[in-house]
Image (tube, rainbow, N blue to C red; front, side, top):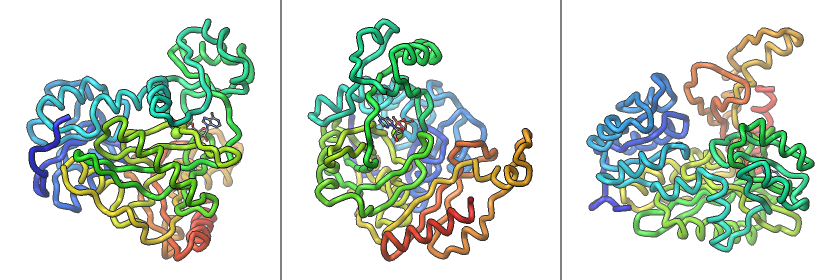
Length: 394
Ligand code: ADP
Ligand code: MG
């Protein structure tokens, strides 16, 4: 990947593939610094498309639209790992693209991802590659109980099934449409952490402190930074592993590495995301430079910003479910879902709660609608503010 010949400065256009909330928060960061942003996304209405300076409504593999983006923008990034690698390659012929097609291609396929991470000497959960149902006959029995995960296109726990036996795994494999999968041993997690790394075209990298992440139903629910559970030695090992992976990919941009912490503080990588990550949203309100500002700086060929934490934080995800809480209580047996707007004024009555809503038109259960970062002078104080917010949202 060719770096920009000289730094791309405010006033110039940056290109973003994907119109979701990560693209929206990128727009906010870039525009605050004086850049203009063009978003390419097929949906006419999207969280990022509605705040971008220009929204090109087109499919991710539309060559005319990609050419338009490349003509306008001095560099291009993505908020979405499932963007076709061929589109990134096409853009890279004329523009710096960060991250590049190779890194995104690895991150979008769980098999390639696990093989790559292992090749860097970083452990992953025990797994087997499942290309056909017959592979389930030869997969080691020691993997059970296990999780079958589709190799591609899974997110927020989608495309996953918990299976106790090979027969259950075969049924799940068939229900996924016989697509390539990994069968992963179900591990006893003490807890989960993630590390967000930003790496520039010059190979310099910075990383944020570890976030401890609590998931509910496979979806991130709470991120705490700094967490009293996570020892400095563990953070150091996780950071080293994340930086090793970024360097091994010759990565340019923002990369998140998710880890499982097992008994005895054993660390294994769960997965990585070639973009800013939900567990790094604390950096918007709690750090000198946010993960989105780093994405801007990295693609623009500028020095990276400080990842110093200004305040402890507890971030709560806001899922569409909270729009239905009142309806559930009013009529618990009702089949018709009536969405009602959550009590934002009460949330905002918690003075250290920072509300972020993504501008999605329809609230749906399990859909990420926003997040709230609660700050404090200690993690306990941030957690107390988060408990008040959670009490309001129910
Ligand atoms: P997604 O791509 O949807 O985020 P993940 O593979 O990260 O999928 O799984 C979502 C969550 O499910 C994880 O954060 C973790 O809580 C749980 N999980 C996934 N794999 C395992 C495993 N091998 N052992 C125990 N829990 C797991
Ligand atoms: Mg995950």
